[in-house]
Length: 149
Image 1 (tube, rainbow, N blue to C red):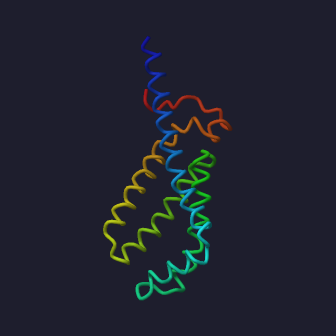
Image 2 (cartoon, one colour; image 1 turned 135 degrees about the vertical axis):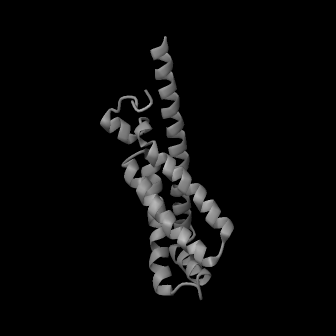
Image 3 (cartoon, rainbow, N blue to C red; image 1 turned 180 degrees about the horizontal axis):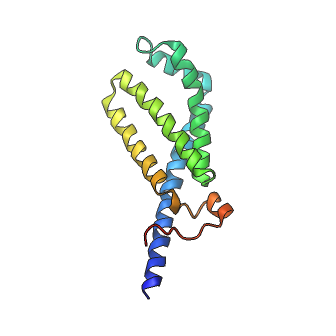
């Protein structure tokens, strides 16, 4: 009876992890796709205009061109649970760059908002052993996570 409860509790944690991972992946994936749909040049031009006088265009434009690609790729990886650790690391690195930019703009509410994403990214990386319901889990045939014994 006690073993059944432990198994059920682990399944609940793994399901909860999957739901959080998928939701987080959807956010990045569709924000990235949205930037492509609006036009990559329009997005980069808007970013360049927003940072005019704050950061040099030579720094802003290359980063702005990478944002939609990184969002889309990391979002797809996280959503599918494929190379999850790499996708989360990529999104974490992107968040560092984005947070630097909004700090330079002096947008404290956006900095705080980014920290919420960073916290979710941290939780997903910390509990990546619960990533059973994913492509990674299928490829590895993961047993239930054992760190909660």
